[in-house]
Structure formats: structure tokens, C-alpha cells
Length: 504
Image 1 (spheres, rainbow, N blue to C red):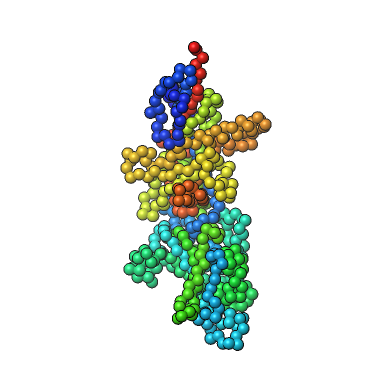
Image 2 (spheres, helix red, strand yellow; image 1 turned 90 degrees about the vertical axis):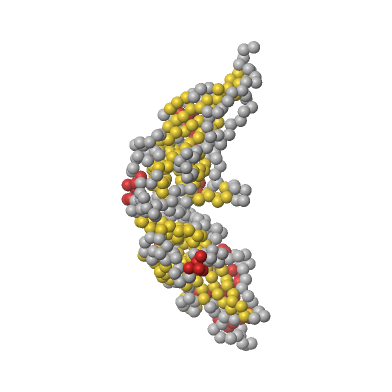
């Protein structure tokens, strides 16, 4: 729906328009040539929106989520489990075999290499799940199981957040370690926990019980298995691919019981401890870490009924993560171009206003920080192809949560210029109709975009290098919906065209 039309002004033809303008009412006039004038006009249009429930999203992230919480807004229980694989450094090495001092019995001069390998033992072995942040009660008692995976995740397969790895990647014969924990490790003193330079909160899972490999051979612990595999075949440790496919496919961490906390696991580590001799005897540590180079994926279980009920609220729209609700917008593409078919569409600015939460709780979910706008039919392809925001068919907006309500665009997300999206959709429609009169019926989402909370990685030059789904716990309401009681969502556009005065 068209709302209003502002006055036409003339400015010098060399003037350039940028996407970062904050208002259009300061566009001035300048006249240097009566023959060649640039005419500028602005207009404002309404948008419609609705909430869209999603059953899953592509799950490939550097953060693993582990825990179970109750959403204070919906009463929905959200459970997150995750799979992780561990990698090695290129050309990884352990000390020479004859320098190992952690032995079941001493080496002797008649030992073959195989005899020496079979005497090597690890002193201990564990997995640590380091987390830099969490949601909920750090003293909530949780119970989980760490399952050794029976085979590696496949590099060319796309794993979505509703994928259950136990159906395919967890066998009955592999190692299973049960662990009860609280996020605050009460076995560590307050002083130690307070020292951020030497302590990072973590969940420790000991792997010190006897371990039987897939060939039926038993070791005193998992670390001994890893060490002996190295000395049997160092090639298995040359790179992460070899290690994952020949030694350790990875682990699946599943919540069994407990409620109240969700750990955001930033680093997963498999650590092995042993002694070796040089000038004297030393304690050695071998670490295999889960990183961006190895797959890490989170499995999410939501209560679908409560999400459906929330999405049916037409007085607003919702954004909820992980893997829950997005907002879909219908862009007024035809209205924007009608009467301006030969004009240049310089800017198209869209501001989404956030509504404050109805539920007041000390455990209220965070507000999404960064939103992605993409065509609604491009959700899967954008993330599966690991696309980067191009500001033509995809756009980023960040939350403006300034503490003062007088701040500009307070409590909003601003997409400064989506003119490229408008033009692209308009051209696609015209091209499609030229070949197929039924094109619009066959492409019912041609003018729809979806708003998705995302996590963005930038390089040292602040350029975006990675965009993934935000899998953390977030929630917010936006102005919109078919029964919106607030001011409408509006798109403000700026056009320009040249007027040629032939009177001489």
C-alpha cells in the first residue's frame, strides 16, 4: 500500500546517493545546467509479514550446544546434543618410542617394535568441553552420555539440526561414558575458577576405563589405544582426515537427564597424558581438538506444538533460535516500480522494530544480534553453498539496542538499502512472464524474503567471511503480522531520473 509521496527536487547530475543515508529530508537543490537536471523523489510503502516455523536448519558450527532448558516465553523444552570430531596438526608426532616412560613393564633389549608398542600405556585420558558462555543455572545438575561414534561424519553430507546421529553413527559396541555435571565445577576452588588467565570453564569426561576397539583388542584406557595406534602407523596421524577415518571417528554428546542449563561449547579437546624421558623424565600431553576444520554439528529437539501456537499470533511476528521461527516479509516490488519503470531506484530502506518481551524472567532469552535477509526460496542453498552476504540478494542488519530510547533507531534492525533485491525480483518477474504467462503462479514466493538470525565471522579487515545459522538461545517479537496493532512496517525508497530540457 502506498502511503505518501514527497515533493520533487532537482539537484546537480553529478550527485551520488549512498546506502547509509539516515533521512531523505535534507536532500538539497543545486542548479548548474538548465539543460540536464536530475530529478529526485521519495516514496513510502507498507509491507506485510508473518511468522514461519522451521523444523530444522543446516547445523555446521564452531560452537556445540549441550543442555536442556525450558523457554520461559513458551514453556517449550529445548534439548541440544552435539557431535564433534577431533583433528590433528599436520605431520603430528609423538616422542620416539624408546623414550616413552609410561609402560606396563620396562623395555628390554630383546623387545621387537611390536613388543615395545604393546608395553606402552597412557597415564590418563579425558575429553574436555570448554564453554565461554552458557544459558540458565550454572548449578543445575545435568546428566549426559558421551558415545564413541562408529564411523566418521561424511564431509559431503549436509547435516540438519533434526538429524539423529544415534540412528546411523552410534553403534552398540562402542564406548559409552556417563557423566553427571554442573556447569560450575565445584571440585575446583573459587580462587582457581576466578583466574581467567589459567582456567576456562569446562565439562570433563574421563576415558580411563578399559577400552575395546572394533577389532576386539582391549586396552587399559582410550589414551593407550590412541598412543599404540600412532606407533603402529604414524600415517594415521599425518592429518585430520587420516586420524578421523582410521583412529577416532569422533563422539556424540547426548543429554539424558536434568533441566536448567545450556553450555555453548567453543572448544572440544581429547587429551592424553604420558611420561617420556630426555635428560630427565617429563609429563607429556597430546591434544586433539575439535576445530573449524573438522565437522561439528548440533542436534536440536523442540516442542513443535508450542512453536506453532506462537507463530499463530498475528499481532506480531517472531524470531526464535535455535531452529524455531523466522519472519517472512512480502516486498511491494510491483508498487515500488509502478510509475517509475524508467527511473533509477537509488535506495530502499527497511527498519524492523522489536517489541519488548511479554514474559519477565531472569532467564529471558537473549535478543538476536544479527539478522540475515535472503529470498525465501534460497534458505537451504545459501547456507549449504556457504554463501557470503553480497548486498544484492542478501543483506545483514544488526540490533540497535542503545540504552536510551531517544537514540536513533532504538530497538530496531535497519536494512539500509535493499534496492538491489527489489530490482532483482522485478527483473526476474518480467523475464519470467516474457517466456511463461503462468510464471507468477508457479513462483508464488517471487517477492518474499525471510529474516533469519545468524552468526557472522569477519576477518581482520572486518569483511564477512562466514555466515551460519545462530544456534544459540534467542527470541524476540517484531512489529508486523496480519493483525498488527502498531504502526505498519514501511519501506522508504528514493528514485532519480534525468530531465532533459530541449527549450533553447
